[in-house]
Amino acid sequence: MLRSCATMPRMSTAPDLSAVDGLTPLERATRHKLMLGLFIPLQQGAWSPSTYPRETSWSFEYNAECTVRAEELGFDLLFGLAQWLGKGGYGGAMRFRENAADPLLVTAGLAPLTRNIILISTVHILYGWHPLHLAKFAASLDHMSGGRWGLNVVTGYKKSEYEMFGIDPIEHDERYARADEFTAMMKRLWTEDDNVTMDGRWWSLRNAFVAPKPRHGSVILVNAASSGAGLEYAAKHSDLIFITSPAGADLDRACAALPAHNARIKALARKHGRSVKTIINPHVICRETEREALARRCAIVEHADPVAADNFYATFAGGDQASWRAATREDWIVGGNVHVVGSPEQVVDAFARLHAAGCDGVQVNFYDYLPDLEFFGARVLPLLRSAGFRG
Ligand SMILES: Cc1cc2nc3c(=O)[nH]c(=O)nc-3n(C[C@H](O)[C@H](O)[C@H](O)COP(=O)(O)O)c2cc1C
Image (cartoon, rainbow, N blue to C red):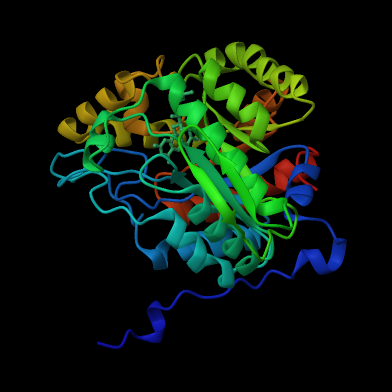
């Protein structure tokens, strides 16, 4: 059946900024005092195992509209999560996250709809990929997007995911040793103007070659680790690190814990002669008044799907990952790493505190994405600009 034009994603109306300022997408993003990203809702139910009414959808059309609108509002980047879940997702009546579009393919589809926004996709590099495959795919995506494509290198931390692929779980720090070798091979393929032969511990290349090369020497490299081994990897290879609050979702506690975390990451990068930018993902619930915003937060929690909430929380409370140890079950019903709930002025104040705690950027997630994004654009962005956080 032919789709009607009404459901076709529309193209961004934003002007091509590279023609105006001549900067690379990463240079343009990092020029802002506070980088701004959108965590797109590729998974059914996005971040919140709650049935409180909303229109958020995992569909390509919905995510495309979120992306195009974010670009028009001046966001620097978007980010897509990757996950592998069984039938029913995290379960419950809402079958939380059962439908989940793949970010690699979605970001490829978003490239021709947009002109400026950085498109970051997660890839689980240890689930059967060869570095030559991903180096080639990434270089192609770099060209399709005009140098705007970013790779969030994840190793996977769920035993169930490894089992799905028929792979034995890999010890935590060895995962990052493998990621290091994988990334080193991709970097050689992206930069060397000759066939590459390389014997690693886990992969080998024989006269392997990738052309075209990414236009800025590498695709934008991202990681989201918290552990010692993960941060060593990220400090060595990544341009951007998605961080979590070591103290859970409460803003006060997060702002007390984040300065040391951010300082440690920056020091690690300096040790490798590099600099990295850190980005945290707040779940933003913003209304004209604090009272309305708090009431909305309450409604989201009251409508929790109890089974989905239990399973979602158990995932992050367990395993050998180091990122979410301090988050509570209620934190996970709302979603995100830090909760920012309040009026537009309070949201800007919270972002200012996260920036003062050493975060170079925020990538926001919402409950009801399109209307919440629109409200954010109308009420929060002008305040962020006048406070000097956005150019
Ligand atoms: C913002 C953010 C996004 C992440 N996205 C994914 C993802 O899409 N898929 C995934 O398996 N893990 C994802 N992770 C998990 C990390 O890759 C990492 O495994 C986790 O933070 C634990 O850190 P550690 O491996 O250093 O212990 C994400 C983490 C953060 C903070």
